[in-house]
Amino acid sequence: VTESTELLEVVAFVFSIPISNAYAEKVFSHMEDVWSDKRNRLSVAMVKSELQVRLNFKLSCTEFKTFIEEQKPLIAAAKGNTKYRWKT
Image (cartoon, rainbow, N blue to C red):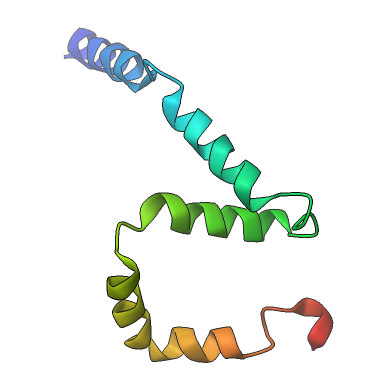
């Protein structure tokens, strides 16, 4: 049982190694668009959030609009000042 467990761990490790760096290049390409000279005051957290939206949402603009309109707490939070620490 121990040998098969160790072998399974080795195989899992080997399969976790990416065969290409294309995804990382895609992330840096998007980051270059997000964090530009014009938008250089963005916090790391904001850049991270925008990249997560760009890379993980697969909705069309219309689908996203419909989805967001149904999220009342999210809309209220977006309209509030709590996200801005300096506006308390």
